[in-house]
Amino acid sequence: MRLRVPPFPRNASAPRIAAIPPLALAGGALTVGVGGLYVAGLLLAGGDIDAGTSVRGVDIGGLSRAEAIRKLEDRLDPAASRELTVTVGDRKGTVDPKQVGITFDYAKTVDHAARTHDADPFTVIGGLFRSGGAVEPVVRVDEDKAHSALTKLAKSLDRKVRDGAVTFADGLVRQVTPHNGYALDTDAAVAPLRTAFLNGEADVTALPARETKPKVTAAEVRRAVREFAQPAMSAPVMLTAAGERFSLGPVVLGEYLTMRPDKDGKLTPHLDAKGLRAAPAVTEPLADLSARPRNATLSLEGGRVVAADDARAGVLVTDKALGKAVLPLLTKSGSARAGEVAARVTQPQVTAENAERLGLTEEMSSFTVNFEPAPYRTRNIGRAVELINGSVVLPDNTWSFNRTVGERTEANGFTEGVMILNDEFRKAPGGGVSAVATTMFNAMFFAGVKPVEYGAHSFYIERYPEGREATVAWGSLDLKFRNDSGRAIYIQAESTDTSVTVTFLGTKKYDEIESVTGERTNVKEPEKKVSTDKKCVPQTPLEGFDVTVQRVFVQDGEEVKREPFRTHYTPRDEIVCETPRPSGERPATR
Image 1 (cartoon, rainbow, N blue to C red):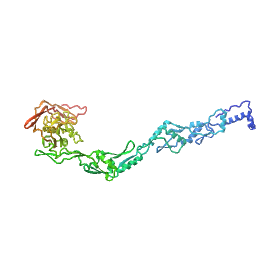
Image 2: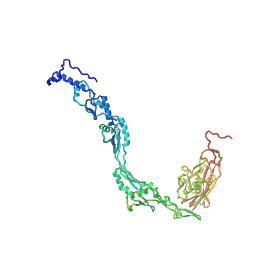
Image 3: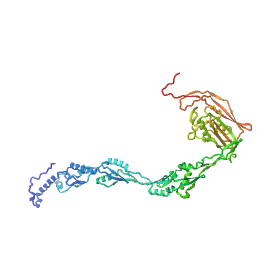
Image 4: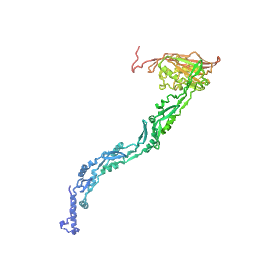
């Protein structure tokens, strides 16, 4: 580096400084003294940084900028790479300053420490009498990098708030301790990290976080345990329902008990009464209680109806009634932990005492339909008969096949069978039930009661009396009649593997009901069809026709009235089932 010294004035003398008296400095000799100091200052300022300048104890005085930068990098980088220990709430972690974009800016630090040079004599001479001193390093922060890294840090150090809770397991009370939730404030966390880095702090730095307090406190957990949970699990409760006694122990009770917080954070008990009602500890002791009442069994002896003494009331213990009985007992002790479950009792319609009073005195009608045996028929017909048998129809009430039997599903005890769909035999759930419908229709017909809804099969089936048969379809076609006999009707239904019989017991309104079948009219011949449907059932041909059946009411040997039942049957086409040919295959020529 070359220094340029300004020339002294030409007329200035250059005496030796040592020979100049002190007072002589007031004259022209002052010029020579200042000039000498100026030159000395320039010579001493051979570097860019004042002597005695240091950064974090690293001496950089007299060094050029490039030299100072290199020295600071060598000496300060190891310390600047140390991880900072931080906390978010009560969770502790570490932060690598470089990963969050916090570093020393050595170039700006040296710029700050460097002395500015110019030709001003006072500045140059002043350098002879001062020292650079300690300089704080400049810190650089990459905001984007810091925010990204702190967001990742939050995932590991954030903690969700946890409410206090009380649970039950194996008859014991479990407590869940609440704790506060903390979410790191990533924007506000940059400043304390920069400060900790700059100060080189080894202490833990608490980063700013948003705190969430639990809604259910530890005090509330203790209260809930003391006032409810511990008493609830302290002993069994004893219950009585319709005379049946049973107990529920803590293990069973705890399985269906919970404590839930309300809007104010108070834990309140809840009992899953529906689940408890279905538990074996409840269902087994109440197994003998039938929810449906059972009417007395009626039979015929010498043409008169005899009622057995086997009627039984229906007793229903509801979920709501069970819960209402159990929950208040859980905070009590000793003999007070016993209670009654309210039961809904339904009396039977027919008993040995009231059968004659209801008019159940004689057989009104009976009809039997025979059929070819098949497993699906046996099951479906038997299930329908089971649901119909014992039905009681009071005067002016309407009986419904679909309402009584229900939907023909597997869950209801039915299986897939053959029935008529779209004028063809098809496989469908409940196939064969039409035999029961036809038997019921004929029992109704000869009992003389009023039909409300009925429908015949689309084409005629030979085993049924033409014009006097019925079918049913869930959701579209029902078989209904109204009891206009003036007295109660009791329906008996029974079946074998090849037959089904329905009998109406009550009081006859007419002495006799006769059936007169007219001639077939509007006869039409069937067609032949080929089906490749997977559910195809072969079908023999039969002509279609119209027929009218007259129901004749006879009283005291005289015809009272007639009712026509008109039926239209479509032709039963011949159906030939074939296996579908693979795509592109042509039929063989003959």
